[in-house]
Image 1: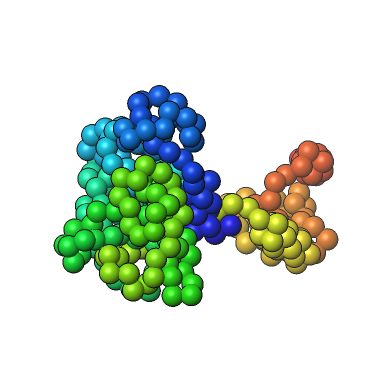
Image 2 (image 1 turned 135 degrees about the horizontal axis):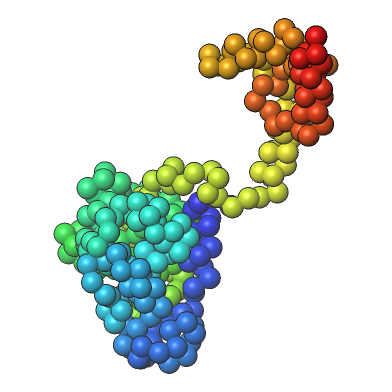
Length: 266
């Protein structure tokens, strides 16, 4: 899966989660349901001690949910970079979160993409009051997964649930989209697929069939290599490749040791 697909998978698994009345049973999707804003997302980020400027469990949590998805998927350091947030910042608030993207030049008012963070406004984009994660864009609509909302159509702040929703791309309350720089996610950080594994094995087999000669010594080893070669202690493989930086087997070591002994006996 790509970085965006991994993120969306994390978010989608949380659909149906309901906030809790008290700070109990936070890991159960539906138990202890209530309007207390208690939830596992804030709890987990609070436990890290460095994500926000203070503990946030018990507060409105739509932005906290998005931040949790990033950090859950990519880890603390990379997750924070993708969100354009510094540690112990104000990213639990939608307006601050949007501004972090703007400061990095990563905020867009049109053409959303899966993996963007969507922001909603009710004052002409001066501030943002709700947010979510873009999971698809098609048919003139943007599809999202949001925390602290409900299944009621339109933007619902403090709705108390994780839900998938959709809006017309021309919906007046859309302020814009923060776009994480997913190039920060290295390819080797992404999940291994069968296709990638097959590509890696094909490259390995090709390298075995057509090995690159390794017979040129570095300056510091040149004198010793030339001596060993001139005296027949190191001859290389059947193609004359000295394989200078390949591992030495015990069998090869014994052969070289015998040659050295014979050289001393001259």
